[in-house]
Image (cartoon, rainbow, N blue to C red; front, side, top):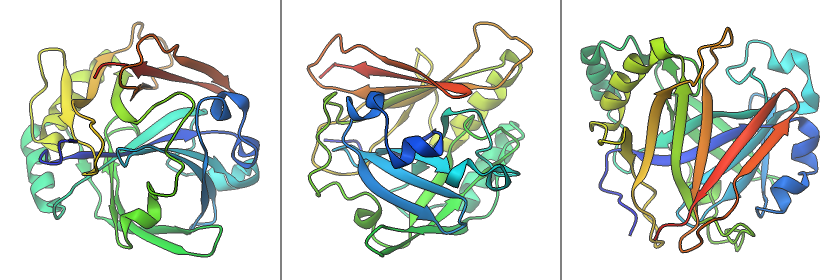
Length: 270
């Protein structure tokens, strides 16, 4: 069973794409995944499609509507295309004050803004509402933001609509590797101790859970390490691993997209 006893749970990972790839997903997406409908967000700037997994997590394919530079300007995901961010959630009530206190004690210099309302409308007209809690003191994607549903989670992540079977056989998020400038690693690791309420394992993994559904998905993690080379471009790189139980040797996805790239690997362990 997924470990829902952990304080933090994977919610979703965000992949930024050109708008045309949202309207008509490219082969590297459709050859590997079943695409579910999404919708336009309430700010009128972005639109998404979802790749939903049996463990209740998902990949969010997002784009700025019509690739409009005015919609990009000042937005937290005004970044090169690729994996740009990730969200955690909690099964229990979100202890925002406790999180802030742990982060203050960590000395990381990272904190969170107060939760704010968000939402979108589905293609069939249903309104979805949630609250998101965004980090301060780090670039987006270096530490998670938080997503907590106001409307039922099943409406946002419909895992029972028959679209969780994927050609690549992925059944959930497994791990997210954040590669960043060496000067940031210690601060981000200190923050992740406070965020996940756990210390890193010997291999540097911070344990997170998955939403409490019926699939057998365990040992999920977030890891932080320094970039292989501290070049002039110190933007952090996010690499994702998906779980494909019993299917070893599934080739990774390495895809150049517009100004960026996506790296998605597969873990076949039981």
